[in-house]
Figure (cartoon, each protein chain N blue to C red):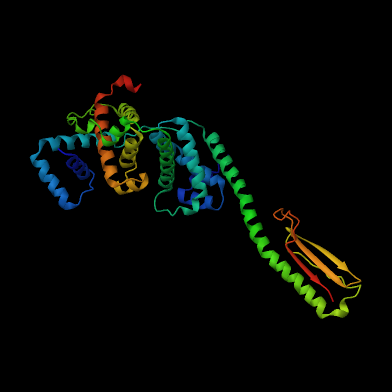
Amino acid sequence: MNDESQIKLQAYLDGELPAGEAAEVRQWLARDAEARALLAELQNTNAALAGHEAEVKLPESREFFWSKIEREIGRQSAAEAPARKSFWARWGWRGLVPAGGFAAVCLLALHLANPGAASAEFVPELELASDDMGAYTYRNQEDGLTMIWLYDRTGEAKSGQPALMASSTP
Amino acid sequence: MKTDASQSSANDEQLVAAARQGDMGAFEELVARHRDKIYARAFSMMRNEDEAVDLSQEAWVKSWQRLNQFQGESSFGTWVTRIVINLCLDQLRKRKRQRTESIEEMDEESGGVERQMPAVTVNPTERLERGELRKKIDAALGHLSHEHRTVLVLHEFEEMEYKEIARTMECSIGTVMSRLFYARRKMAALLADLKTEELR
C-alpha cells in the first residue's frame, strides 16, 4: 500500500473525503484485507484516545496563580499608560503650537489695530492652553516692541530653541 | 481575593460582560473555572510543568487584554484554549529554530520506519481500566515529537478538522494528514509496547 492510499484511508476514517472518493474507499476495503487491518488499527487508536486524555491539574493554588495574573495585568497596564500619555502629549503639542502661535499673532494684530491702546497701562496677556507649553514675553516700552517666545516644557525642545516667535513694532 | 456569591452563580457570558467593564473579580472567577483545562492543554503540548504554567498564565493575561475581541462564536473556554495553543506553538517554533535539525528528526517528520510497519491487529487497550488507559496514553504521547503530538492533540482532543489544524500550525493540509497518520501509527505501536511498569 503506497503513502497516498494510506493517507486516503485515514481521511475516509476522519470523514474528510468527498462522497465519491469515500465510495471508492469502501469498495477498496471490501477487497483488500491489508487495508481493512490498517483501518482497524486506526479506529482502535482513535477509540483509545477518545475521552481518555490525562486529567492534569494546575499545580498552583487558585490564590497564587491569580495573584501572578493580576500582577502581570497591572504591570502591563502601567507600562501602557505612559505610552498613551506621550502619544496624546505629542499630538496635543503639535496641535497647540500652531494654535498658540495663532493666538499670539491675533493679540499682536489687535495691538497694531489699536495703537492708542499701546500705552504703558496696556499689557497684553497670553493664556496658554497646555501645561506643556511655556512662553517668554519681552516688551520694550520706549520702542513699543513686544516679543513672545513659545517653548516646549516637556523636554522635547530642551535645546532652548523657541518653537515660535512673534514680534511687533509700531 | 473576591468570593462574591453572585459571581459564582453567574454563567460565563455574564462574567465576560462584567470583565469587559473592568470587573477583575469576574475575570478571576473565569480563570478559576477554566484554569485546569487551559493548563492541561499547555501541558499536553509542552510536556513541561513550568513552561505549561507560564504559558497558561500568559494566555490569561492575553485573554484579559483581548476580551473585546471575544465574539461568542465559541465558548469562552474554547476561545482561551485557542490562545494557549497559539502561544505553545509560538514557543515550540522558537525552540525549533534554536536547535539544529538532525537526520533523526527529518526521518521522524516523514514517518520513518513506523509508516511501513504491519498493522497492530490486536486492540492493546481493550482490557485496561480507565485510569490505567489514561496513564498509558499520556506516556505514549510523551514519546512523540512535538509536531506529531500537537497534530494528534488538536485532532483528537480539540476535535479540529484538517483545515483548521493546518491554519493553526501554519502548514499545508497534506502535512497535517501525513503527521496525523504517522502519529496514530506510532501511538498504536507505543500503546502495544508500553509496559505497565513504564507508566509508574
